[in-house]
Length: 148
Image (tube, rainbow, N blue to C red; front, side):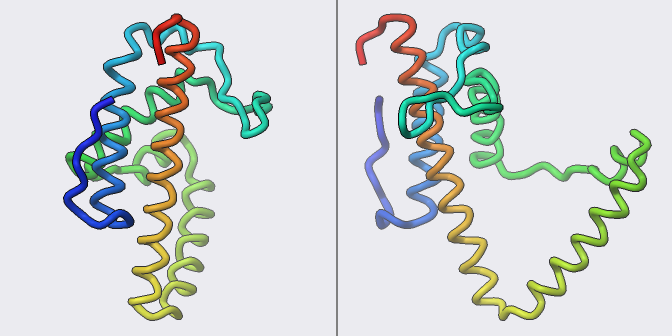
């Protein structure tokens, strides 16, 4: 795996984003036949599969999609319109009420605290997804007998 030389401090969000992109790119290059991952479950820390967890194939496709968002930015989504079209008007109303409650709670925090909350959450999520991409790559290499 070719990892980019860090241009930023270790805990910098840009470093975490670069590492995530590099690990997912490596995963895409290693996994030649993603269909081999369809029925495989990710292993828990103890080495046992988690009940109800998505397959490694689902992780593979999700990690690739997130990489596009990390590298190119988010595209605007019209979730409210999709929910209304699907007959999920009640769900959209509940979600709107929850969002208003969440915004009130966030409004009580100062802007700096909000920034640190979201920043640390994003850092944590990207680190977690990087580990998942490494697990998908490692598992694929194990089932295909490739050198690790």
